[in-house]
Length: 149
Image (cartoon, rainbow, N blue to C red):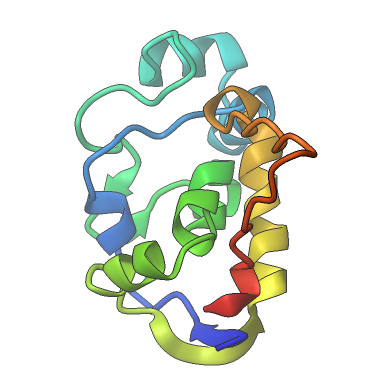
């Protein structure tokens, strides 16, 4: 399989309700605070842990009608489900199918395009995605091809 379907489903907040933290880039903070009409410092002190993540077990912007800051939502949220840890292995993608009703619906997406989108997470959060050391030239190593879904 070199392609699959994905499209966010209207009214769905399944990805917002999963456990985990929402990490923020400085650009995410700038965009969200501008959208809310508050200074970045106020946004940080009100909504984040101070360590670049949103406060609380539940996103403070998730309301009954979905994301209250949807036009300015964080990088991590915008790129879901195209995170490296999801698109780079078939098993992870199939696990995500169980919680994301948008997978299997919508337009066809090439795996290579999904991997390219996932690179945005690696760029935004480089400390979270440590590169594996290159194999030594004396040993051949089989590399997994993301296009082999």
